[in-house]
Structure formats: C-alpha cells, structure tokens
Image (cartoon, rainbow, N blue to C red; front, side, top):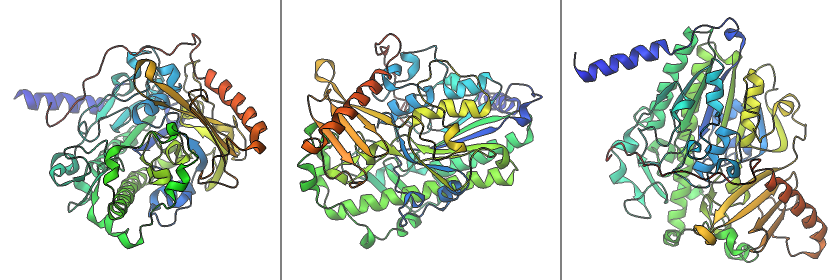
Length: 498
C-alpha cells in the first residue's frame, strides 16, 4: 500500500467513525445547519428586491424568522467572522484586520462550534467560516481554527484551479480585493460552491445514519465574494440593459465626513458606466448561483428527514456596496456595508414567514444557538439571545446594534469609527467625533442620503444617541478594559503556489 493510499484510508476510517459515542438524549437535541455567504448584502428577493432571483433563500425565510435589521460588528471578513464565532466584539477578540485568528489573542476562549463539540455534537465545516484569503486560499484550511471542527472539507473548483487567467479584473493579477468577474462556461457542479453543496449532501447523509448524535454543520459559501465567477447561465438572468446604476453620488457625498468615504479604492476610478453594469450583473449572478447551492443543501435536509429537528441559520459576514455613496465593496459604516441578511428557522420555536424588526447583530448568534440547543457557553459572551425574538418577532430585544471599523494606518495614525443602529436612527462617530458625525433618519431617509448631524433640530437626538453609542462601545471591551494584543503573524496558505 502506498503512503498516499494509506493516508486516505486513515482519513476515511476517521470520517466514518467521527468520534463520540451515541447519546441517549442525542436524538432529542436539535441539529444546527449554519449557512453563511461571503460578502452578501441584503439585495435579496425576500428583503424587498424582486429583481433578484433567490428562490431558495426565499423559501428558507418562509419557514423561519427574517431579521430585517441585522448588522455585522465589523464590515470586514476576518474581524466579523472572529467576532461572530466567539460571541465577542472585535475589541474583545483583538481582531481588527484580516489574516488573524482569535487564538493569537484570546487562545483559551471557546468558540461557537467548539462549544457544540464539547457538548457531544459532531461539528463539521465545509468551506469558509473563519478568514480565508479569497481566492488564493480556496482549497486550504485558510486561517481556520482546528479546535472548532471535527471534520474539515476544503474543495476547490474550476473557479480557483482553471479560470483565473480568464477573469477580468481592475488590477491585473489581483482578484480578491479588487472588482473582478467572469461568466464561466462550466456548470454548477464544477465550481467550488457547487462541490461544497455536494459535500454537504454527503455529510448530511452520514448524519442521518447516526440520528442519536446531533450535528453542527457549517457551510461557508465563497460567492458572491470577488472574483464574481459563476456559470454563464446565471449572468443571462440579469440582462445588462436592465441593470440600474446609483445616481446623484456627488450631491450625496457633500455632507459625508471624509472618514466615511475612506473605503474608496483608487482603481475604481477605472469604472465606466458599462463596467459598473457588468460588475453589478456579475455580483447578482454570483448570488443566484450561491442561492442554487443553498437549495441543494436544503433539499438534502428535507430528503433525509432531518428538517424537523434542525435549526437552520442563513447569513453573511457583512454587507456590500454596489456604488451607493460612490463606494464599492465593504469597510464602510453605511447601511449597505454594515447590514446583513439573517434568517433563522427553528422548528417548534419560530413561526415561519415572520419578520423581526428589532436591531440585532451577528454577535447574538452564539448565545442564541447555545440556548436553543442546551449547549454550555462561556460566561463572557457579549451578545444577546435572540430566542425571545424567535418566539415573538415583535420583541424589541436590546434595541440597538453596534458596528465599528478602522481608518488610517498603524500606530498613532489609526482611529476608529463606531456606528449605532436603532429602529429609527443610524448615528456614527469618527474618532470619537473629532473627525466627523453622521445622523440618518431611516423613517424618512432609508438610503442615508441626508446627514442630519449639523441640523439644529436634532441636537437633542444626537446628544441621546452619542450617550447610547459611547455606553455601547464601553461594553465591547473585556473586563480589563484593554484590547487583547495579537501575537505573531499568520502565513497565507495558497493551494497552487504554497
């Protein structure tokens, strides 16, 4: 037997065994199917965008609670995902940048999937849950946490292994951080997200055979993260002559503090109206392609008889700009960048097809899932449980959600922006207000076109919201009051050029 075959046999035996013995109460404990898309905003049919073709996310919303005001805690992949999976704000994880993992700063903290593992669950990951360098780290473990998972699957499809030379990009040779796209002639099953859906079907089939052991299966789809690569049929669903562009950008930017626009990238000066339409078409196509893979996983859940005892979560790590305020991609504190889709279907707890208007955050998922499943969680979690809202979508919850972002360079040149979202208002302070304030009234201005921060009629509102924001910011720190220091640096894994 060759070494390669022997190693595959060992892996197969380990997967079939998958550790952990049967539990008498295991069959009664709910499973968790955690679905997360990369860089997905709320441009979905179920969120009021009928031009978007997302039938599978729509049908999940029909059987769960759709949170209308859900927000990330940091509009960048790494900080957001570390916060979500630890149940701690970025100021308590110490993670304010990509290519970092919470084990570098708070190594003893128990992550969300790790808590489920320690409580007898089979915890598996397919694709991206913690930070990855997309697309180069696709097919590897990325910057993942081994303690979080019992099984890790890292497929790579044609989008990563064959098609990169064909991808259009604003910056030659770069695809992950810049706008880039390609309509692929290859069908779904050849793409990374398509392979991931097949892997999820395989894992669910295994889970169905051992019903006395509950599972926590996390599936992290890469689309619609750049490069926007999807089978060409999905591009055809969004004809270019039907793609609309954001207008009035210059007028909109006049009352925005400079820090609010610092996520702008210089290469975006190359965008013509035609290229803008192509980018929006490709982003939309990638969403519909991802949605189709979500449908395959949900179909498997139903086919295998697992749906009635499985909590399903569907979300994203942050939102995404498509030209609003003259911005593209992420790292702003506007609604488009901070807001995320969030759907939770909890059989026997939530009522299908309902909408919760309370402001919530990704940080709330850890305490929510732990409570729903009776899993012991760390005492220092900083989010709120959403179980009361799942039971009654009109529950107000905490009443606000907080997001933050960095600006400037390292050392003394770096400063923070914090934004608090209440049911009516978005209020933002840059560098504790020294570099600008923003106030938007969502009752009259849902697109955040008019900054009311200098309006005399809103002095009292700003005073109240500033007090609320600063109290909220203080609650994001650990008991020491100090942001944990990140130790060491991480190597960026690359499948094809290690």
